[in-house]
Amino acid sequence: MTNTATTTPVQDSPASTRPDGAESDGRPLVELRHVDKHFGDLHVLKDINLTVSKGEVLVVLGPSGSGKSTMCRTINRLETIDSGTILIDGTPLPQEGRELTRLRAEVGMVFQQFNLFANKTIIDNVMLAPVKVRHVSKQDAHDEAMELLARVGVDSQAEKYPAQLSGGQQQRVAIARALAMHPKVMLFDEPTSALDPEMVNEVLDVMLELAGEGMTMICVTHEMGFARKAADRVVFMADGKILETGAPDDFFEHPRTERAKDFLSKIIDH
Amino acid sequence: MEAFLDLFREYDIPGAFWVNIQLTFWGAVISLLLGVILVMMRICPVSSLRGFATAYVEFFKNMPLTIIMVFMVLGMFGQLKLSFSDDFDINFFWLAVTGLALYTASFVCESLRSGINTVPMGQAEACRALGLSFWQSASQVILPQAFRGSVAPMGNTLIALIKNSTVAAAASVTTETSSVMSDMIEFHASQILQIFFIFALGYVILIIPIGLLTTYLSNRLAVRR
Ligand SMILES: Nc1ncnc2c1ncn2[C@@H]1O[C@H](COP(=O)(O)OP(=O)(O)O)[C@@H](O)[C@H]1O
Ligand SMILES: [Mg+2]
Image (cartoon, rainbow over all chains, first blue to last red; front, side):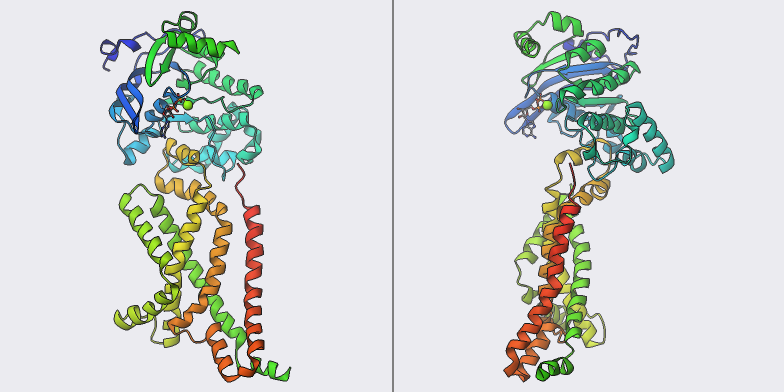
């Protein structure tokens, strides 16, 4: 695999060892090279270069409107990019069609608003994509879905509809739904921001467990506790640019840029 | 009273309503199929299909039904020799059904589109993120929710279709209610009020339950989020 660290110095921090012992093996799984994106006149992503290695847990921080969601969404092409390249496990993201669908299935995504299918039961939410996209038999898909639901602690709710569950339960189902596709990497876009405070931890616990199992994760979150415990690296974005990248403790103790200092003072103050 | 009952003996009034019910039934079935196809075209990623569906809807939505019906008979049958059957009555019936269905499909499409607008963007994004194709997302997630969100406008479309079925008279379907009513008035002008009353009541009896049912269903089936 190409080592892009030489051309893009901002991202070259080696994957650190996590306290739980899981370690990334260095193979780049997600690569963004010189990615630019506009919404009309608004330049939302400015020459983004980022490499996430297999097994790495990356936390993306930054003020609202800095382009964190947009960056996440370009990684499974929910948003198109104007220029640059995005590679998933070495393969460039296809424009459209079957190839794109196949690659998308390798990138799991968890949204701020959960986005469970409102017309399907919890178990059907989890089974749908494995059956339709991966052509897994209904029986196997059902068995695995129940296993995943048990893992995130909502198996007793399998026959209910999403609206009957609490936000925390819905988000855990959304994680199970994404895992059912056996993705190579999971994207989390502020997974706990829409939750009542007492439900935040039940979701973070599931994410910590995933991180501990070696899942490659890109998490947009302002949960400092999670970042410190699970992240191998944090990336700080502002105005569409990656301003800082580093080990979590380093970044939180010694932010280098004014923007980062300002941002950290705001999220720590309350 | 005797004269009133004679009207029923002389004319097959329930039979006339039955013709309108059949026109409505087949018109509803075919326009529902067409409407679903049209709305899928309108939201699909292929721009030429979107353009076609938009043009279709705008054309038929703005065209008076009478003109479509007359065109079915004089244009489709008269000029282009499109024929469903050698039996004139059956042929005109199906020409009328076709005209009704082509016209109503544009309203079904619009009703469904208003239903699709009740489905949050996140539902389609979750589908795409999981690797579902356009067709899979539409059939599994978006349309089922759109149907449930469009029960009320669909009910209104059905009610309009029942009333519009009387325009089949313009396609030479002579056994339907408005034609039978005209005949009756022509020969029993002194009973014109009774005759109006019979047909008005008939339509009220047909339509009120549909209104009640759609109100009930649109609450019952509403997608809880
Ligand atoms: N679909 C869109 N159309 C136009 N502008 C958008 C769209 N989505 C996001 N933006 C804008 O792009 C910028 C970055 O947004 P976003 O990626 O959501 O930031 P973040 O997730 O960091 O808060 C914001 O200024 C936002 O208003
Ligand atoms: Mg965001």
